[in-house]
Image 1: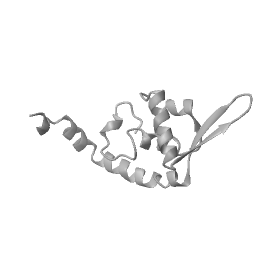
Image 2 (image 1 turned 90 degrees about the vertical axis):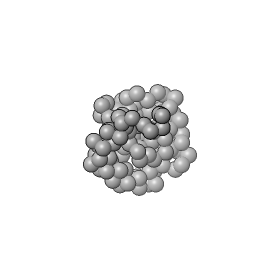
Image 3 (image 1 turned 120 degrees about the vertical axis):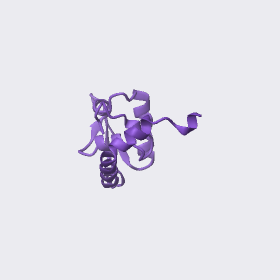
Image 4 (image 1 turned 180 degrees about the vertical axis):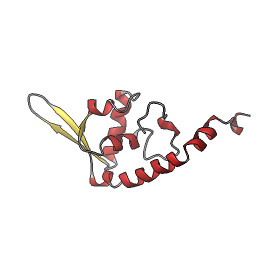
Length: 115
């Protein structure tokens, strides 16, 4: 999913926007700061990451915690509802892996809509 050779828009199965599934995967092992999320999500802009995180938070999948103090910081983590998406994401990733060549071939084939 995070392979630079794998275009994230190739997956025909999406949860939310283009980046939501990958953000959920990034938060799978615990809370992360905004800057920590940008490392595995190469190619995402700060604006788009912010929008995606806000949408995930609004939908109850991600919790945002702001810590006060001399070094203010914000962390994002999956809610129980967000964690419940991990198993369906595993199934979607397994399906995409099994059908990878077919997906690539279909993407590269001339479209009948282009006529």
